Length: 323
Image (cartoon, rainbow, N blue to C red; front, side, top):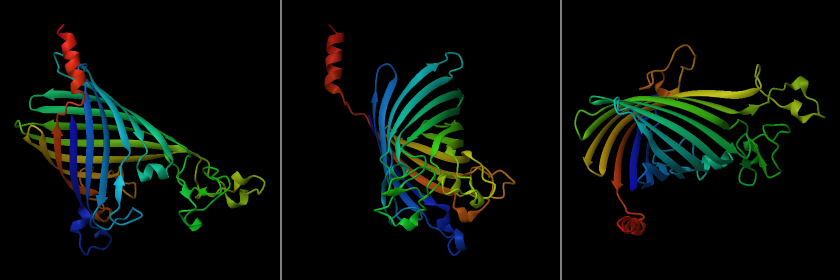
């Protein structure tokens, strides 16, 4: 089976014309290809990769309208068990990532492993959804690395005793990579008609960086001990950094045909608390600071086509089974 998904996004800052920092148009698209192999024992194996491009002026790419590849994801999923009385369904997934994206290569990612558990509980026309996922990243260095030959030395501060000891042709601009993460998603799906589904998801994610030791002060600098000359902000503490984030999604999906689905959505990704740390952010729309442009609107077209990848082997298996 092959799944092809084309998604376009429109940022909320597009509608804030003439509103200072809030005036930041965003329009992009992503093309995702996901070939999937299904086996009779309810096991599925799939590959997933996306190609994306922002058509407006980008704030976070080296070039405008730059085509970006995602990491290649290899996945194995299986329906583990369904309880007869409650109809509660348990599913599990295992993923491995190959660093084909520019971001992962800049972070020196070697690979990442992720495990997920899904629980689905149907209730009349509704279904209650829960997913928990843990991911472990494996990097060559604990911080991103800049190639000196491709970038000016002014782009980063090469320090003895920094996050990593880098060779003469590369340096670390600072900031630790994410070592591991854990996220939980709860949701509800409502299917009033056979072709229509309405979904709401809330995801809370926690990530931890590699250990950091950049806490030295100027008066503690000993030229014979380069690590003591590290610099950091006042009151900084050694150890793992922790980052919390949340994502709220509202979706409406229409199954136009057996292999074509249209989905409208609104998504808001943000930190869990406001900038002043006094209140919790509303997860489904950016009502705290429009200048951050945290909310995006999307339209997805998903095409699914059953392809007999192993038709010859299936025919041979059927022949042997009939003997």
